Image 1: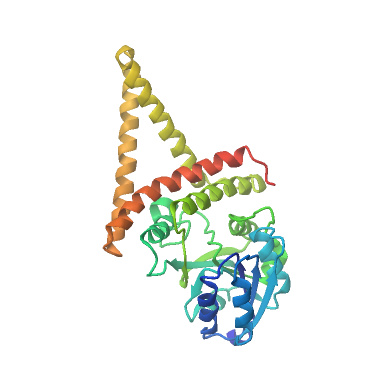
Image 2: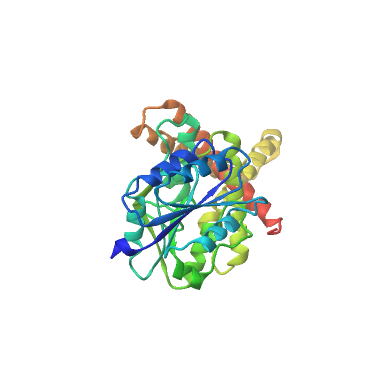
Length: 341
């Protein structure tokens, strides 16, 4: 019986005083009641106080673990796992809020023995800024992820997002917990690979939906994307047998665009003395590819208008699509020359 299944919702929090209340309140409205919530908090703002006040009226068991010295998101989640009493382990971030059937649908989706890890959909809050809406759209669009964050078409094995995924305690007994070398990005992707290697399947379940805040400004967006690129190299070092060329697309694109820019400068100054037709034809082909790239970016950006008539978001979509590819590629380069510490 599904009602007998105990779930543990493990939430990591760092300076989330603006969102932690809505997070906890949405959990109190869950139709499924047999769950506990464990919050691992490293905040320096008012978040801890808000949680402690909520504990006095919480309809569910609420455990607060305070981190004096933060060790990263993977280590924080492992602390939550250690305290968990549930057979189902659900992971989310403190800037999320949840639909009332979120826990119930997660438990139902994990009933099959061979399903080891699931993830769900997410939406940006309707009152978010135009930039945040763009960050959410670009991060999840098929053009920039090829379905890797979920969708009707997924190329390759599905790896869930860190802020909305769930597994079983017995699966972690086989595959192991999160790898603590991951301080902020990539820990759930590396765990997914280990779970798949143990013979379990991962699954995208669109009905498991959360409302999630994305980057509030350009600096935050670039920083998160950069560290995602770096995390990809960390994952590759741990699993050299798993080569997914898709993730290295931004690096190839970055090198190509930089080479094209250098080539353009050279031709601008020395074009009159370059007589080779081969060189000229290569440049023309490269220019065509660049134009095609930006045309696809433009088309993808304008598709947002089907969701909301907001030209400002479309503009941000163009900028953020290019930034996502460039920052991710730079993160890969940085990771190649940086140890895992």
